[in-house]
Image (cartoon, rainbow, N blue to C red; front, side, top):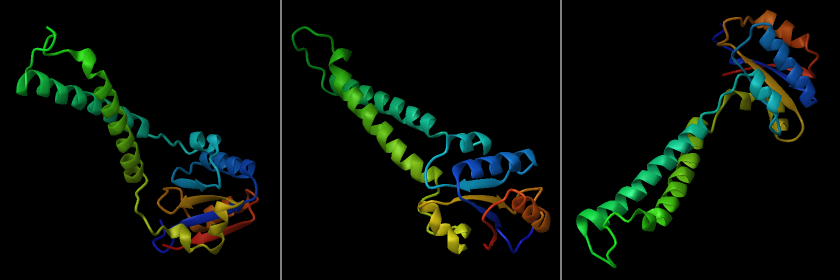
Length: 176
């Protein structure tokens, strides 16, 4: 592993080219790599072995919201202020459904927002790929594949030769 380099970045023109490059890099044994594209490409998530966990966090947030909504109303109507209204039981759960639904949606939504921010590492105003001049093109029409120096197979010369064999527009060193 080279301490003076974050990794090597290859620039491609088309989504098909970056998908094929990622597929070949994965087949060559590289595991610590990342692709940057102007729009989502479904094949890349499979090739890069990206497994999002946000949906599980949102589910847990929704369940916590539902339990909170039920518990809040149960406490208010059964423990703190038990009132007999129309002969209904204190724990009249059908009346609780609206608040349970609202708190489920609120907690799930807040979990989605803050979970996404936390999992994405925001706020993160600096990343080494920002040092590459052409990286600003990723928001318009270019596709990038970065193989990080942390990868066990990373060797500066061999990895550069491998990336150049994929026919990119350019291969650039990414400085930390």
